[in-house]
Image (cartoon, rainbow, N blue to C red; front, side, top):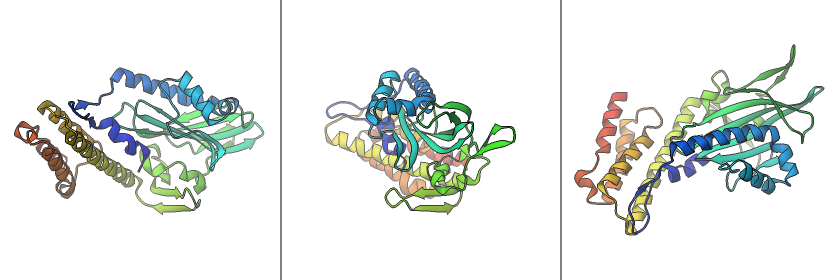
Length: 317
């Protein structure tokens, strides 16, 4: 499961504290826009200056402190730390801000007479219905030396398979190198690979053995199923969190129960696809029933999210 889904419920759930009332966890749009602007600017800086800064500041710890000092509220992802020339990476920099996670990979490098050319990818993940969205950004860079500053030559929101270094001479992405492709996780971002077959290859490198497995299928279906499973986990985590809060003595008003149900409906509709009737009855309805049983008063005048979702499901059929 993607890291954004492991953390997602913290950003979307309605937090309950013992002895108090439920409060909706909201992110002010102004601060979210500010955080996204800063992480986008920090991403460009990382691609251009990240490697020389890493060495100048003495490694991961120094780099992280530099980023936090100069790019608030951007951090390098908590437990994750940047890696250079280690663990199979030319360079990998994780950034996080406002519920958005940017994983910046230096994927491929060639030394040519005109300098060092590289392909970079930025994989964007979100913890919630952010102003940003899950997607990829691609860059081609040039440097005079491996530890030097990068110059961004070209960027795109679609895979860059080749770049013309000089008339008639191309720097080409190694689409057949499964070790490189495994770092892209293309099947999770099919919209970023509209003209490439890579989105239909699930290429996974085992973290311990280094063994690479390749499975061919439908990238769009894989991405949908992964998101669907993530939303289900999000829903279950929310219900469990409220159960813990209510057992600890928290009370929930009718207005707050309505907010809870509406929030869960949004979670379940994020995929943009209708929920199958058998899944609705087998999984989602069961979760709503569990939520109702947490507080007997909630059933009296509660917001009927189950009926609303049924109506939306029928409209999408």
